[in-house]
Image (cartoon, rainbow, N blue to C red; front, top):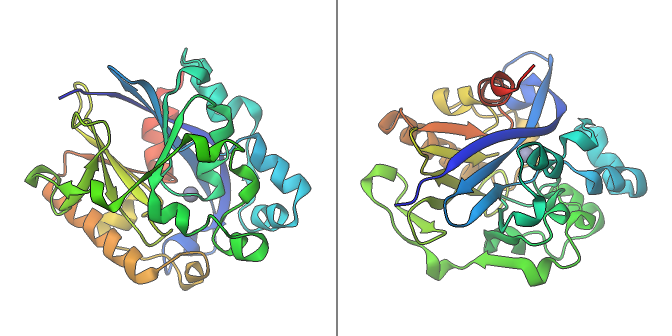
Amino acid sequence: MNQCKLTMLDTGYCVHPEHVVLRNRVLRPMRFPAMFAVIEHPERGPILFDTGYAQPYLDAVRSTWTGRIYDRVTPVTTSSDQFAAARCRALGIDPNDVSLVIASHFHADHVAGLVDFPKAEILFLKSAWESVARLRGARALLKGFLPSLIPTDFEARARAIEGTEWAPLGSDLGPFQRGVDLLGDGSLIAVALPGHAAGQLGLFVRRRELPDAFLVADACWTTRSFEEHIMPSRITRLLFDDMDAYRYSLGLIGAFHKLHPEVEIIPSHCSEAHGRLVLATETP
Ligand SMILES: [Zn+2]
């Protein structure tokens, strides 16, 4: 089985009141880093899991009313040196060499940088794209989708994971029962974590010399959420696709954590994981 090197990076952050994320908490503003992952595969080379904020997001905020409202709800701080393409270059990776971007879902803070990786195939669960593809204006905004962030050559680069690709998983990934071996070598296994967004994808990464990692994107926003099964506040019902599915996915992550505590579970916006995986590794 091939094994990968995983590097977590951020593309800036947005601000929410804490109680939005952890129910019953105070109204303290919290920073939510927008992380993405660079996965270096021994044969496929660099692969990205999400792309974070990037210039198309700032353009949408400046030039569209939906972008302005999006940014009002989740005010974003980012800059060009924090965009995923710049972060890759700082690692010595040419964005043109990225052959695959795995999109966990189509919210703006996950797909804004797609355009900066023009040679990459874009992989996602079919149900995720189908839930937003035809939405425009207010209906798109309510799903966290800004259509202008989708590259014009998206259709040519897109690879939607079909239902027929799902296969039974081994007990090492239980309680998850079905998943997709994305590269056919067991190194990257996608599972469904719906609720926050329809068709949200989670990714198991087999790492070199380290325990496996489980990238859960926005299936929960903090480590405490899955450790203690803390649901976000009711206001998030407006933003989430399906709260029952969210609760179920969160329960699966919590159960997985109890069964496999050695696996590092990484929510995309967890400040604790960000401190451990990004800030602690940055050179001063
Ligand atoms: Zn997000």
